[in-house]
Structure formats: C-alpha cells, structure tokens
Length: 314
Image (cartoon, rainbow, N blue to C red):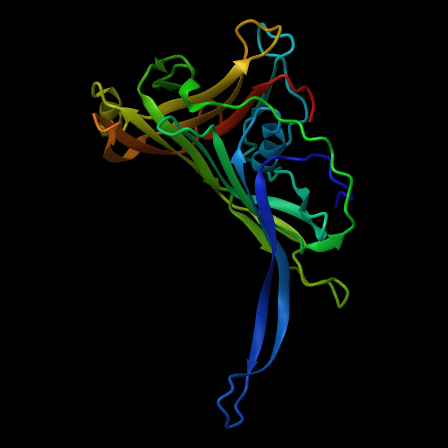
C-alpha cells in the first residue's frame, strides 16, 4: 500500500466496494426466506475513462503490460523519450497501484493492491473526441483515509485521430515498413487481462479479501475500419494472410527534436477476420476487420504498446 498519492489524473473514474454474501434460508412455516446473512468475501472494483495523453500513459501502461520506469531517447532524439511496453509472456509482471477516490469535502477512500482487468483504447476520426482510454480492475476493499495532499496534475499532449497512421506488413518484413495512407478511419485496441483474485485462508485475523492475484492466457483484439477505394485490405482478409499491424496516433512536435512527435502506438500480429461493411460520411463504403493477436515467432509476443513524449521517468 502507498500511503499518499504520487500521481493525479484528469481521467474520470470511481472505486466501488464489492461483496459476496451468504444468506441462510429459513424453514419456519412463514413466508420469510432468509434467517441470517454474512459477508463472506470483500474487495473493490474500479474504472477510469477519458482522454489519454502522452505524459500520463506510461503510468497506466505499467499496469496493463509491464514495469517500465524510464523512457529511452529514440534515434535522432534529444529531449524525446520512447516508452516501450512489449509483454513479458513467461511471467506475471503487471504493476499494482494504490488508488484514491472521493470528495475531500465528504470522504476520501483508498484501494490498495489495485490491478487492471481490461482496457480499451479508441481512436475514431469520424468524431470530435481525442484518443480515449477505458480501464477497469479490482483492488483490496476500500478504506477511509484522511484527505491526502494531491500531487500537481501534469497533462500531456492531446492525441487527435486525424493524425492517425497505420502500417500493414506481411511476410518476413519488419513491422512499420508499409504505410497504409489515407484510408484508416478508426481503430481500437482492447484486451481482457485475465486477472483472477485468490482468497486464501489465513486465520481469524486475515480479513475477507484476496491475498494474491493470478493471470491466465490472454489475447488482445484490434478492430480497424478502412475506407474502401480498392480491395487491398479485403484481399488480405480474404486470403487469411498473417499481418503485422502498427497503429500510431500523434500529437504535437516535441520541442528541440525535429521530426519527433508525441504519440501513442500499438502493434498487433494476426489475420484480419470478422468483416463487416459500413458507410463513411454517407458517401463511401467502409470495411471493418478485427485482428485477434497471435504470437509472432520473431518477436515472441502478439501485441505491444508504446508511448513517445518528453517525459523521462515515471
């Protein structure tokens, strides 16, 4: 448990207490069903949602993928820092956090040992929102705390779907080589992180909450919507061609680094499936495809997240 907050965000969210309750039925000749009730397990559930920015994304990506505490200067960069979150597929390394929630005029609560369960990142050029993120998870039961000193909120650059880029590569080529220009309309990345709670007995003073968590096998999915000036993406989908897809949504240039930009990026490997037709601005056809991440033999994982900004440490 972290006693006081170290980060503060503009994302909206809540923490909610959760219970399992056992109710003992009664058979006394009356119409009443229960004679007594007892809380048998207790934990908390949390969610956050809003616009993601490049300054705060590394905090959340630590919870979604793996620990990374410093960014690395990209080729040609000086003040730029690239944060790379490629999954560790042989061990459970996602970070936990102590989350705080409430109104300082009423009550502040905290939930220790909070772990992420699932997330979705959305970039949609048909709307006016920036890139959005939703995360939900679980934690230890909420407890009341005194109003803590809140760190200064730092906000990074906004990321606009109109600045989105996409690369699709096949075969033995390196990902990020073949750009698909002016046809990707929207993109999402989501994953169920398969986190489980373990309520291990520990005697009469151990409390009612979980002691440890576990994680199972998982995959991410990315749904891409393309305008259809030709059949290039449909042909890849129809042939079941394994694809290496990179989606990047950029923000403003990074000062003192010509050619470097703030951005969020994801890579995903797999075939395009689940096709669906649609319309773009009522005048052009669109094709939706969904990629379910499949382990790439060369890199050893099936999806990854990246963030570039001028933030150097977590």
